[in-house]
Length: 177
Image 1: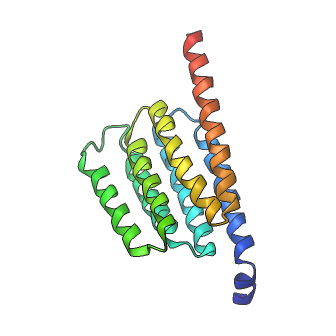
Image 2: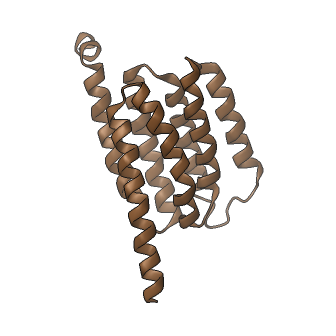
């Protein structure tokens, strides 16, 4: 079994990545902050598996922190948490995790993406969450191309398309009201 995993780790990674991509594409179509955040938890855990099989540990750390962060942020909508120290803690943890898992200069891109993600996901307004996610996608797109994460690369393209569709769809809905 271990030989099978070692031999097929790249393919297994892409399978996990395409599963994560399926969740990522759909989550931006929801209008409730909590639902988007909880879908992001599942998505981040699938990305952890993807990057583990690729042997890329900075993105594993960023996605694991992302899963924890998104779970906590899912409670923000109901005002259960409001402390501005929470996003600051996640920013500090992102920097520390990047330092601990540093592989090369490309490792800075997941960190920058994580910083934008923290700011984006702290927003309760889903429109701002979508807009601030665009630079996250750009950082991960470049990182994924460089590290042959084909599922990750495709994901960023589809997530950007999904965000644009959601922005246009919700703009048209608001005009009709």
